[in-house]
Image (cartoon, rainbow, N blue to C red; front, side, top):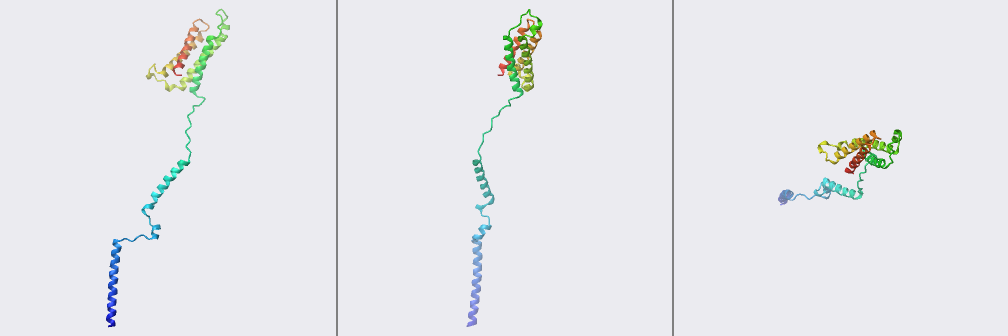
Length: 203
């Protein structure tokens, strides 16, 4: 009886072992193993993806950096105090002032000696006005050469300014060369008016 009982026990244990292994294999296939606590630290979970985590950190850090950094307004453009354009403008205004001063200065008598007429205040102011007119036109050509275009026509403000200014300068130079002849006064006034209109166009 004892050998037969032991044989039955061995067969029973073997059958139970086989059934247990089969059941375990089936459970493993149907129910995957839950991750252990240690695997959470070694495996990359979907919600702990390093790229998305770093992106979130960068976005948050950028927003904080922008909030912390003060926004300074851009400084307004300030043209230089001394430039060719400014020199042209100031010389033109100085020319007009000298033209007015020449017109109101006392004129020497026509019967006065020639040397006295040429050395009078009127004559000196006239020569200074003509010289300043020449300087005005020269600086204008140097500073605004690209603004003058013949294809734009004579009615273009820049073209009209340049032509009237040049004509006024030539008239004033001619008046100085003819002084103290009587015809120099009308030519000088015409040149001064032309210079004034040229300045008014672009003022």
